[in-house]
Length: 89
View 1: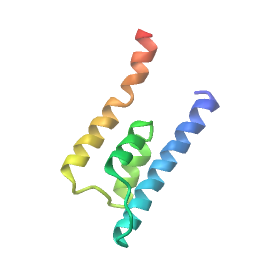
View 2: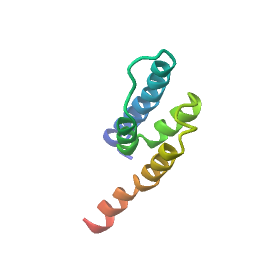
View 3: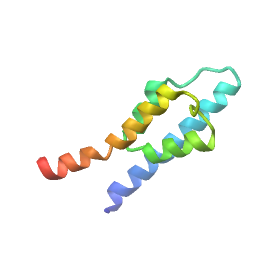
């Protein structure tokens, strides 16, 4: 994998991980939260590994069944765009 592809993916996963930590921290203090749609968007933008790790490490959004289903769906469907790009475009 070329470096210009690898490092942006690492960066977005680190951002997703940090975003889950930030949202959990704000939730504990009654502060302004990150929208679920924003968390899902970051998960969809190649941050699925960082988002899943962040959710587990910070124990954030793990009890919300509706969110877990949507995050799992986004995580599974996310790599499919690579197959579409490679074989059909």
